[in-house]
Length: 374
Ligand SMILES: Cc1cc2nc3c(=O)[nH]c(=O)nc-3n(C[C@H](O)[C@H](O)[C@H](O)COP(=O)(O)OP(=O)(O)OC[C@H]3O[C@@H](n4cnc5c(N)ncnc54)[C@H](O)[C@@H]3O)c2cc1C
Image (cartoon, rainbow, N blue to C red; front, side):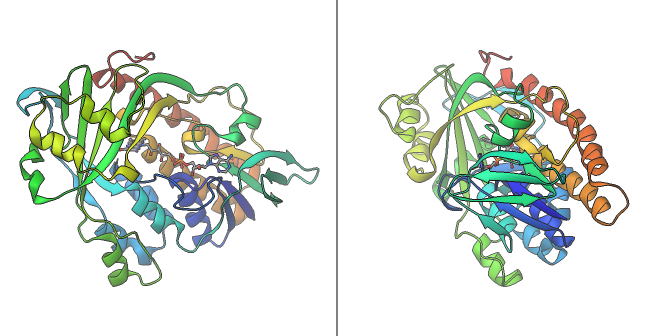
């Protein structure tokens, strides 16, 4: 069996790793001109089943490394004012495992065949049941199955399910990160909390690696090269509806809304890494009507993009990757046909994918009361 995976995000790469581990050929096609061509790094909280899903997709010899480059999620979620006084509670803190997306992505890339600068433009199902994908700047590729793991703007979905389109919630946020130094020790109660003031909210989260990723890879898995990054604080400011940066950099746009805030909060933004500070918008994709199962399917944000306030987008993409991997192994070993394996996957994925989008939208108003879908 040969599988073409479109999109080198967490979901597509986890699937490709899982298939490779089972001896199934998987090629990954990525639109970006290079693997590190753009901002890729922020911390994600995986729940235990999301973490188990990615673990199951990776070779067991890398499990000790994976365990060394994460941290446990904890901390009560408070609501603080701009002087860091407690003014409420957001609810129980999320439990699970915190991972850095960029680091996890590098681990997932190891050993895979990834074709960069290969944006999918369309595909054809051939008379023999195979599927041929077309790309910009490279030859078409033929496989038994094409998997669209190409995120919220999925070109694969555009052909397979053209009526399933993203909805813009109107929520904009600036995200960035700042090296975690002793200077920010007194901010620790703010990690995991929401700071509100002047119509904006600032969310902070610490990433403390058990061992720095580069060093951990050198010690535990010589064939893996991980980025040379240290502990940091991820910050995200939710702007008023349809907020923009104007002429300011992402960092200065955040600072301009923090006049009179606690000096350590301002220092945190002033010392941010400018290359990893950017404006993002929250768009969701709700899985619509199911198509007749065939040699093309979707996973992750391509079919169920959630609001990050739900904290379940990566978890659901990894769950898809692990589930599809298991179904395809069944087919590869002759226990069911390819089409019934894909049908099995899609039936389950549509159910929990729709639920993930719904629950993420329920949590959006706590962070952005004026969002359009709240
Ligand atoms: C600030 C923030 C915080 C988050 N926190 C959490 C969290 O705590 N927990 C959680 O579970 N989730 C979280 N998420 C969500 C999570 O990051 C995503 O849901 C998850 O990464 C989706 O993975 P994916 O593989 O489906 O898509 P993506 O990671 O978006 O990858 C899609 C890939 O496809 C490529 N691509 C696009 N179009 C084409 C094309 N035509 N041809 C080829 N390649 C293409 C893209 O370049 C990209 O590399 C958060 C998201 C944000 C923004």
